[in-house]
Image (tube, rainbow, N blue to C red):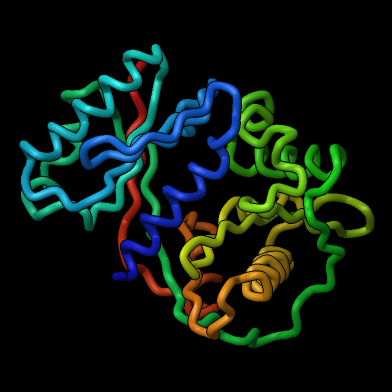
Amino acid sequence: MTSFQCVADNLRQSFRVLAEGRAGGTVRELSGVSIASLGVGFQMFNAAFLSRPVKDTAALEDRLRTAKSHFDEQQRRWAFWICEDWLDTTARRKLSRTCEGFGLRLSSEMPGLAAERVKQPSRQLTRLDVQRVDSPQSLDDFRAVGATCFHVPIGWFSEVFDAGLIDHPGFICWVAYRDGLPVATAATVTANGVIGLYNVATAPDYRHRGYAETITRYAIDDALRRVTPPDGNNPVVLQSTSDGFRLYLRMGFQPVTRVLVYNSIP
């Protein structure tokens, strides 16, 4: 599996584990398109993904038509998440224009990063009390930090990360505390030996103190202990914000693709 496919497949799996078993959630495999929809108000989590390469713009239009038909039937706003390496050169160049033809507008783009091995820390890590989300209080703390950092209304964030997240076996969430206050979060999803890192966030008043690196390494180390089989060759992937990019490069991650999100226009 190529590095970009590791990013794409783990991202798709992260949505699947949140959607499966949820009232209103949908996980479907259509022709060249994967649907992993939580059925929530926050449309970025009612998602469609490519599941195999696209050879030209006409093929991309067919995939988008399939996805749009599904969400039209559900009467839901939705989002198209795509690693651009699925596309040939022409389809990539015309991507935004093609998406606009299906009522989709670019809302976010992030580098997809991968590391075959995470480097050892070059400095002493900040000491934090890192706890797994396993109670209503720790879930509330996870939501509060994430909603603030990702500029999402707390109601939307709470709908996505609902009570089913507590001690979820497939989407493992962490909160870091300093002096009893929640200061940072992270989560991991492991599939096919690949560890995906998600929801890394540091509360605004606590940034630039090394908290993100501490909780990131804690979450990765925990996932490596859990992975089956533990063969010592388990890549770690993520989609980076601009704030975290330099940290991830320092930890040994390298850009392998670009992830774009197109939201349906109201």
